[in-house]
Image 1 (cartoon, rainbow, N blue to C red):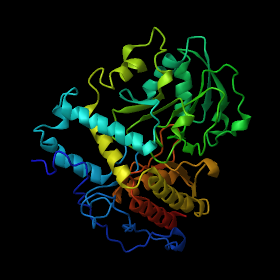
Image 2 (cartoon, one colour):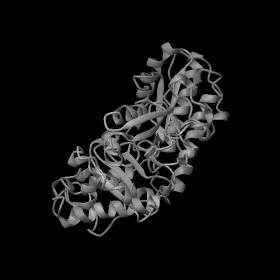
Image 3 (cartoon, rainbow, N blue to C red):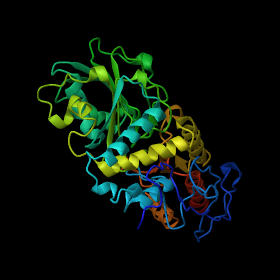
Length: 426
């Protein structure tokens, strides 16, 4: 297969998407009457009007997935933009006239150097990252950063504050115990991780090296809508809402995120770190966890996840083409509002346990009034090409992850299915 783009083109092309025909309007959930109970399950499809990203060819094509693809509500690895997948497909065999695939390139060659440099440049544009912050493309997932951060920022006897709002911030705290003296200054465990604390209620340690938060808890579906201003540094795990909205980078010492939810495939971890925090790692720090090593080598100390970084670069291009993160945030808010409204108006048939003011725009957990129906809900949804709706094994219920790449049509179809399922089982 020959490449279909010029070596200098960075535009996403050939989305080849198709509208999904529908006999059920799902644009306004309120106006949908509950169907009469029926032993038969009806097939649900929908049409959503979506805007094609600027610069993408075939402007008449919609962003709805092709007929042979499912709506994938997985928490991660998660759905990717179809335009990005089509672009990667067209370049897989011969990247932009280079005569080889990105998977075959030397990570020290000029071709891959151009890929990683452009990916960083586009990410800096998306998040408006100041020049005094470094961007690192690493491996090992965000979980590896649970150890890397205290190793790079702390001495063994240093105190660190952790705000525990769910499973991932709890795991970060437990890992930090090996390398410093972390303290949980607030935990939502007693209330099953359904809230986020008022910042004025946080009793910060006077000499804490930093405060750690998880900006969006993937499992429990709670999200910080604004961020605390600690006496020390603020460090945030943003794995599941990274690049879903604008963020003031200057408020943070470190932001880190696994790519596999919003910006690429699994295998890439992105760290944004203020440069003055680099260089103070503990002596026991493994070389692969030392930020100084990776910064000095431009994320190329060893062979990086080259193809994953290339895919992240394509996603960054796509997000910029959509108008940047302010436009992306508007789309994400609309999708979340539709889904939460469906839950709220179900008369208790569906329930979201999270306090409304901190409900995640990315991960929507919900339960059924009749728990015995949850298996049937998941099975029937899959038959309608809506997959990965089962909640995390630690909490049960359902979870719909509606990251950037989930089209409006996917959420509308899910809401229509929820309404129809309720009509048969309420």
